[in-house]
Length: 347
Image (tube, rainbow, N blue to C red):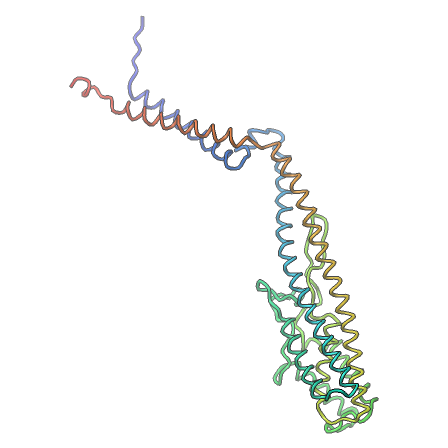
């Protein structure tokens, strides 16, 4: 018969290893109870792990696009509100000019309305949302429309064009438009190139290129508006012409032609703005529908991942509690064993 010697140290070490294993299992059980998924998908699924990794990656892409679409929707909503205000400004300006043409108001009223239109239009187009200018195209860090004031580049550009008109036609500054034909020449040959051509760069720092965003896994679209839209240019041109030319003395026929010409510009601007508002509304709808589709797809992916990697959170929580109880019991037993000593036994 053999005698076996068991030391308190050996028992203590065995308990320590048991506690370490229980602690490792407790971490896994607590993670599974919290997340609802297996702690180690590779260990649980083996060869199918690559499939779940692919699903998880696609799911994260979908969620990222949905999150981005929410920001895009906010930007488009603010843009639509701005376009509505611009259209209202144009309609009000057109009504004032119509009344002036009928002789029911003075030119001073039209000039004041033109100043209000241009000032408010500049403020709307320079709207900033989350640090980005809404109407700047891809130049989101630059203010789209410069203020029209005495020392501005836009004012200097107009003055240069007007001076060139006087030099070319020999007209006097006191009476620059003696006939309706002079109005037509001024608008066609000097104002159109200034606002509808390369001269627009003195007014606008916006980019012609609009922001393009991915709104679905396989769908991209333009999600911004630029101040370089023709409708906006025409409204700025009409406002500027009225401000600069209608305030002085003018032949009645020439005055009538000037008002008719600017009314035509505003009418064209309203048509362009209506088209732009419709396009923006369609883009809003596409973004909303794309987010709904992605949300439905994400739900399918989540259910599939849960089926492959999911665990019963209640079972995991029970297992974690049991392990925690075992660890506490091991700690208590270890403390009792460490108190054993031959000196205490002899005494």
